[in-house]
Length: 355
Image 1 (cartoon, rainbow, N blue to C red):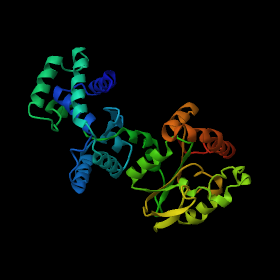
Image 2: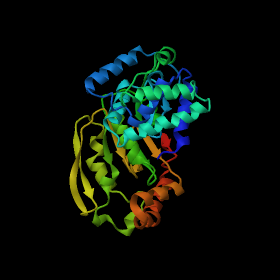
Image 3: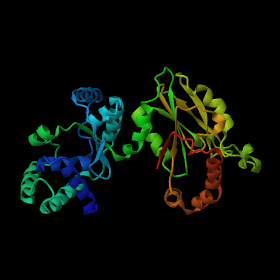
Image 4: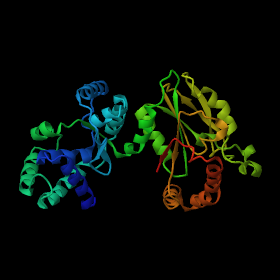
């Protein structure tokens, strides 16, 4: 069961933003909050063409890019996206990948959302009263659960133009805004994501990879081989990574449009396992601790640092790795990372900080 007050806040926020909301629009809000946008996507090419058309017809407006509609989804306003000069293709990929992921128990969640709307309607907070709400809701449910359009009143006065995407994408907006300011060129643009353990580096990389259709090089693939795991190595700033191999297998090829591959070190067998192929030729991402190591030079177009408080960091590590490994993080790996961050001023030298 979800918390009633939680979804009430989203409904109230939408009513304040869009005073033309009718019961029909409230049902649509509940539907999107539960199902996302999976019902819209049937044909990739046609969906992209439709977005291009809507994008071209939407007037530019300085407004919020994201409007939250639940803990999982937001509406991205096309007018705001256009105002910031962000490519329509990035928006489409975010929408497309969100729509592809269907949710379990969406119908029961939708019914729960519908019940919650009665609370703010009874309180007089919404632009319609509870009797109007109950009447429309019962009429709608009588024909089964199905998608619906905004009301004519809402469309005439609010001019809705948006796409529903995962709320996680809110995190990467500062990076996307910075990315569009980079000078144009014929070689791939590189985004390097460093940061504290459990700060969300991998998640940020995955979100960027989705929006930019970029392949990712993971620093975890460059763990030290056994012969380099000696005390002297661990005293070095950033010595916990096989930076020599990164310099030879990745750096010379990152800025070239041609595809390349590198070997992945597998700690479970303490040897090299599979290889990773990097094919994207417009954007490429390097993700993981030590990806900003000064020995690599100024190789990236954007250096991103992901931060997290010490308390939240340990809570995430315990949840993700368990208590035993969390102790190793606390005693071994985190101190090495912190020494590297402090010595090399990694956070201070980053272009963008994500917290």
